[in-house]
Every structure is written in C-alpha cells, then in structure tokens.
Image 1: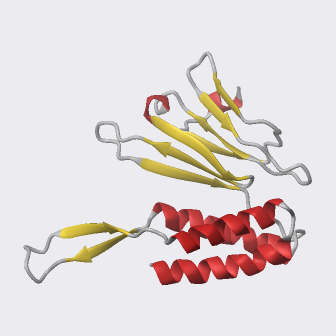
Image 2: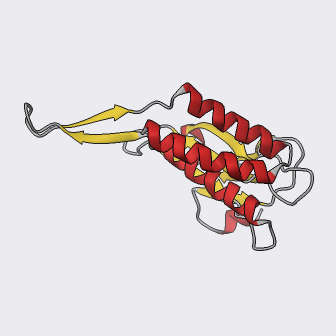
Length: 173
C-alpha cells in the first residue's frame, strides 16, 4: 500500500465511487472508511486512519455524498478532534449544485461549532462560559425539506430552500 511510504495520521479520500459504505481494518491496523456516491456523478468521500489514531476513532459519518466527518476522541494529551473531508464541486456543475454544496459545508461546519463563548465579566472573575445554541423545530424542518428536494434532484427548489435555511439559522443564532 502506498500510504505506508509516507508519514500520515489521516488521509482524506475523494471520488470513492462506492454504492454501499465500507469500513475495513487492514492487517497493519490501519482503518478505512468509505462513504457512498450518488448514482449520476462521481462523488463519495472517505478516510484512511493510521494505526496510531485508530484507538481514538469515535465515528465516521457521511453527511452528504460530498462531505464526510471523522470524529476522534480525546486520548491523553491529544485533544478531541473533528476532521471534515469535502469533495468540492467543479465549475462544470450547475450553479445551484455548487451553491448547495457550499451551503451544506457551511451548515455542517456551523452545526459543529454552535458554541458561543460569552465573557461574564460583571459578576465573576473573568471566566469563560460556553452556551449551546439549539436550532428551532421550524429550522430543522426546513433543513429536512431542503435535503428531500436535493435528493429528488430539484436543484431550483434546493437553492430556494437553502436561502430560507440560512435565514432561519441566522434567526435562531
């Protein structure tokens, strides 16, 4: 395997072109996660995790056919870590598809970092406090509608729903 010739912790893979997900452990201890692709175009993402981090794997999720998320647990001095693998659309795609990709990427990035750090300097000793912001039911419903429209291939509706989702997320945050 070529990966043995280079030093790595995690390698992001794109254009995997699989129609069913795969999770494999090699005899060397490396772990491979591959997501699925859509039927019409080349897509799909995955990760190859080196043996030194395999014990820290919490999960690998394929968020869309072009975005995957690997979560690693905290272990000793190594902090918890989330790695996104994204296979960006090329200029040959429709503008709606490209916009949908970047909207999804922004959504999952923001979903992961929905923590606002508030400085409570009025009554405490300048400590930091984290407050989690939850999305409203209406916002989650719009996100589901956008996903259904995208899965159905209705990119014009997807684009419109993406705009509504962004507005709803701004209102919630």
